[in-house]
Image (cartoon, rainbow, N blue to C red; front, top):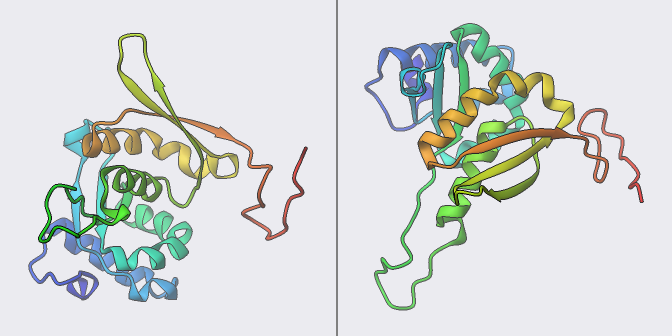
Length: 199
């Protein structure tokens, strides 16, 4: 049953077996997750020296739209069953602009390093949304990135920020700082009622 949740993969590790079984059980309550597939699962606990278990789940990029719809229900259920911090990202590919099969070939914007790194961060902070990004340079010349998240999601996302920060740095070598602020400009995420723009 667990193998049915994995994309083109038959031999599973013990950790992937556990994730597959948990996803199959969650399908009974979250029916939208039936078409969600998983590529692989990696244990990042030792790599980032985390006190709590941290699992990074890779999903195929075509399944990203399905995951975005059910992430608010799926993540808490997965973490409850596996007793670990679960981070989910879509598999993306970075292409070099110098590697071409013919002269007129152009690289899609979605395959650039910046686009892939931004997409990884969007996946990691889900179900919250990023309201703003700032690049800051310290006196010694090192860079870090300040990310502004929606204040409405603070209770859900805040316990996972340390794991997100450590895993993202391991994947991209970028340092992050998170802040929460109100989103008064666009619309309210919960309730469906639009907010009026404050001038």
